[in-house]
Length: 317
Ligand SMILES: [Fe+2]
Ligand SMILES: [Fe+2]
Image 1: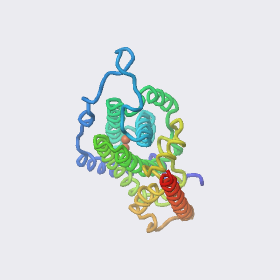
Image 2 (image 1 turned 90 degrees about the horizontal axis):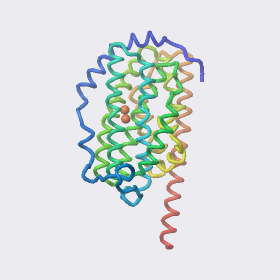
Image 3 (image 1 turned 90 degrees about the vertical axis):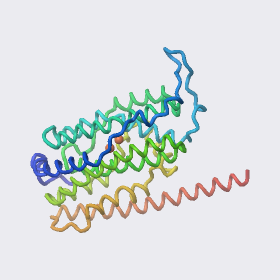
């Protein structure tokens, strides 16, 4: 990866400000108000042990499959780290004008995601609330920092993919829960994530017009280096393998449903007038995508083989 060149952050913020204002308007006109409390089945709840002397948690209190519980924990802990994400985007976009309005609006919308998921999990006793709280403490104490602190274009590219990735992951976690209440809640959250993705994606499309080569460099670097926002959760690697094997978020979905649709929307293969580094960035991206396709095919093959083995073993009893 090369040193980042192109327009300064100050220049980009100024030049993109009218686009941010337009996208903010569009967002506010499209987003529908919703209420986390209305998605939680409160009558299913009862008091826990501790100061109020209720019943302790045990795994048999919920019928949610193990892997869906794991995905719910990862999704919630990811949402929990909002203060760190707020800091990142406030530093990146600043607090002035449409940028500042977006930073606070986005933060307010994200804030209800953790509230809603935690309320649901606590009321339905789907996960161990003590382990969950301890994991939240560890995760938030670690904090989050993106790898591209010094480049707004990299930051914008990252959030475009990341919002879509969380949308897919919430939606598929809801389906895997086999609980219509959980599915309805996560589908609602996924709608928010989708609107966030559109805001960032449209801004980055405008950046491609202003600074095609620097934007191509940013997109290429970010795709090659992509990590989920929750990657610093303790045990993330182990949990993400389970999540991938269950088809909630795997390399095939990452390639086909997140990376490729966004790249196509930007028309990265049609962009003209790139300088030498812009062209180099695009060809690195192509090489990386070819490798990602091979990894996705390998992953699918291994998963199919494992499923076949499991079925044969079950037949034998
Ligand atoms: Fe969220
Ligand atoms: Fe979001």
